[in-house]
Figure 1 (cartoon, rainbow, N blue to C red):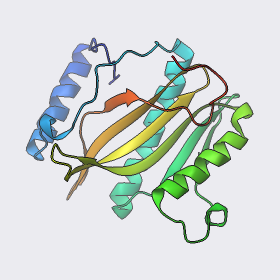
Figure 2 (figure 1 turned 180 degrees about the horizontal axis):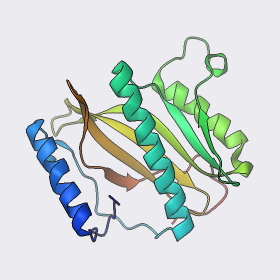
Figure 3 (figure 1 turned 180 degrees about the vertical axis):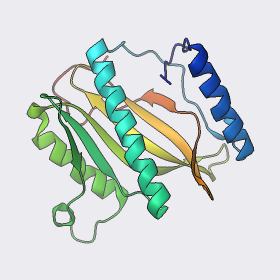
Figure 4 (figure 1 turned 90 degrees about the vertical axis):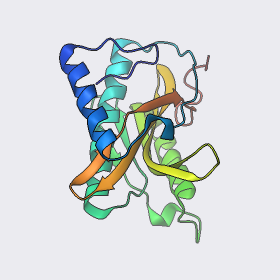
Length: 193
């Protein structure tokens, strides 16, 4: 399904898919109140090409992350990048590029951002992916989520959070939450509104 901040217009099939997902989350103990939403906010609407590029990267990032979580129950940060010719590249952290002793997720993400910045002229869009823990209202760890930071050279950046739970039959995904993101890779490409 498409996520639309202003409120989605769903086809009958999308509405049924959403109801099915809500039933799965409910059966798995998910509660919408467990995921804190930030907003409302306004974002410039990306052009169709940018939206298509970002959707393609988001779908690919979620697919890779879900597969890794199902296989190993953990997710190391990684990145996907869409080249100007349409090819999708996969970036993994290089331990040699990390400062000595720095193997935490923030150091890995900084290394990935640096590698993407070096190649920014040949890229249209990027997705940085990490496993995060969302906090509850009291600051306690509430739920695990796949975080996907999306940037496009001609659209505003967004941060997508997809709460998940590892279950016996695989991974159960909750509703995607979209928030304004930060520009790192294409920082000088476009002014931010």
